Length: 402
Ligand SMILES: Cc1ncc(COP(=O)(O)O)c(C=O)c1O
Image (cartoon, rainbow, N blue to C red; front, side, top):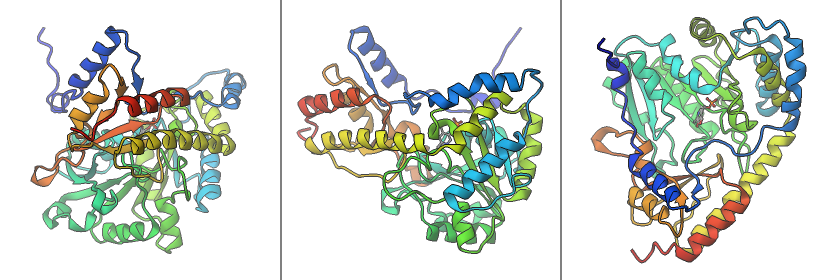
C-alpha cells in the first residue's frame, strides 16, 4: 500500500518548536528541573465540588445513551443564567445557545457551516490555531491581521483592503486575548459590529476562554456591548469554554451563544460532526457554571503569580506591561529576538521554558511577523516554582548587557 497524508493536512505548518523542545529535552537529560511557562494548561485541580458531582451524575445517567448534541436543557439554561448574571445579557436557551465540546472543536468546525471554497476568514495573528486550520480544512483562505502593541493589540479591521472584504465571510476576534492579555471595550465592539454588518461578515468572538481571568475591571462580552448599544445580536456569535474558568480542560465542555440564525446552523453542523459532550460531563459543567466563588479564588492566585514574575522582570530591567486579563504575559524580548531570549531562559542556570512569539504567529501582509520580539509566559507553574524562577532571573538574568 502507498499510504499518503492528504494535501490539506500536509499543508498545515510543520512543528515549529523543534529547536526549543530539543533544548528542553537536553535540560531534562542533564537533570536540570525546568520551570514550564510554555503550555497554557492549568496546573490547579478541577474544583472539588465539581469532581464530587460526577458519581451522582453517572447514576442519573445510568443508562448511558447518546448525549444531547446541542446540550441538555439544564446546561443551556445554566449557560443563559451565567450570561445574565455576568453580562446582563438575556439569551433564549432554546434558540440562542448550543453546547460545544470545548471551544477548540467548535472553533475548528465553525467555518464549515458558513464558508464555501475560496471564501476568506479573517484571523488575528498571533491567534488561536484552530481559527486558521479550521478555515483551511473548510477550503477557505485565512487572512491574517497583526495584533500590534500600538493598536492595543486590537484587530485593526478598518484597514483591511476592500478586495479582501468582498470575499470575507467571518472575522475571528479573541478578547481577552491570548497571548497578549488585551481586552476590548464597548466602543471598539460597536465600531466592529457596524463595520461587519456593512460588509455582511459574521463576527465570531472567541471570548469566553479567559473572560473570567482578569485583574482589574471585569472584561465585557461583545453581546453585552451589542445589547448596551441597542444593536441586537445579529451576525454575532460568542464562544465559551469551561476549560480555564473552571480548570476543566480535560472535561471538554463549553457553549456558543448569540444570533439564533448562526446558532441554528452551528447546531446542524455539530449534529453531523460530533456526538455531544457526555451527559455526565454536562452535569458537571452545570455545577461549575453556577459557581463564581472558586473563580474569584483562581483570579487571586493568577494575580499573585503575575505580580511575582513582573517584579522579577522589573528588577532585571525588562520592560514591564501589566495586561488586564488572561494568564499570559506577552513579554518583550530585551534585544528584540524572541528565539534568542527563549534559548537564553533555557540555559541550565535559569531553566525557564517559554514560547517564542514568532513561532505562534502567522506572517501578515508585507512579511510582518507580529510575534517577533515577544515571548509568551503562561502562568502555569505553582507559586513556589514562580518564586524559584524569579530568584533565578534576578541572579542570572542579566539580559540588559547583551
Ligand atoms: C484563545 C483560546 N480559545 C479557545 C481555547 C479552547 O479551549 P477549549 O477547547 O479547551 O475549550 C483556547 C485554549 O487554550 C484558547 O487559548
